[in-house]
Image (cartoon, rainbow, N blue to C red; front, top):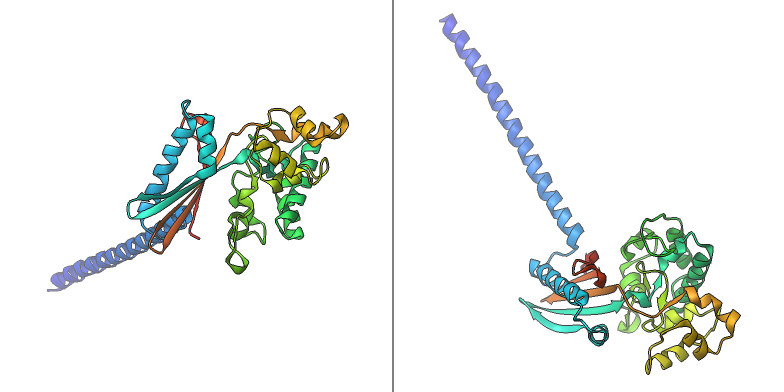
Length: 311
C-alpha cells in the first residue's frame, strides 16, 4: 500500500509539474502572439501610416511602376514630359476609388542639402537663398534657422557635385521642433485656402543648381536675391516663349554685366532630371497620399525614395 501511495504521489507530482510547464508555455505563446500582433500593427502603421483598404497601396504602387518605366523610356519625348509635369493625371478610376498623380521637376527647387556643402560658397548662397525663400513663404524666422542648422550639421554620403546627401527625404525635417506635415506638404490654411507647403519649393535631390526653366517665381527670386533682386518675373516671362539654354542667355535677359553675373554660374541649370510624384488615392472617407522620387535615368528602377501618409 505504501509503495502504491508513493508511486501515486510521484506520478501526481510529475503530472502537476507537466501541467505547470504546459500552462507556462501557453502563457508564453500568448505573449509572443500578442507581441507579434502588436508589432505587425505598428509596422503597418509605420510603413503605410494609413488604416484603409490595401487597394490604395496596390493602386499607388502600380502607378509608380508605370510612371517610372515611362519616364525612363527613350521613346518618352521632352514634349510628353512637359505635358505630364503640367497636367498630371486626375480622376483615374482604379478599383473602388479614384486616383490623382501630380508630377514636379525636383531640379526646379532649391536643394537644401547645399547647406551641408563643404564648399563655403555653395553653403553661403544656399543659406542666403533659403532665408529669402522661407521669408517669402512666411516660415517663422527662428524655425527657418533651425531647419538650416539641422541640415548643416548633418554629414551625408553620395550626392552630386559639391552637394552631399545630408538628408534623403523631407520627412527627416520632422526631427526639427515645429516642423509639421502642413509645413512640409501644405493643406487647408486660413479661410480654407490650400497652401502648397515646402515640398513645392525645396528638395533634397539633384546637383544643387536650380533649373531656371521650371523653377517657381519664389525660388528664382530667392536664388537671384543678391544678384538681380525682383527680376524673377523677367525670366519667367522670357521662358514662356523660349527656354533658356545657357548662363549667357540669362545674363543678357537680366541685363547684368560680367562680374555681377559670375555667381549665377553655380546656381542655375537648364535641364530637368529627378521627378517627384505625389499620388493621392481616395475611396469613401479614406485617403492615402504617397510621395515618391523617381530618377528617369535609372532604366525603370528608379523609385529612390518613398513615404506614405494619411492626411
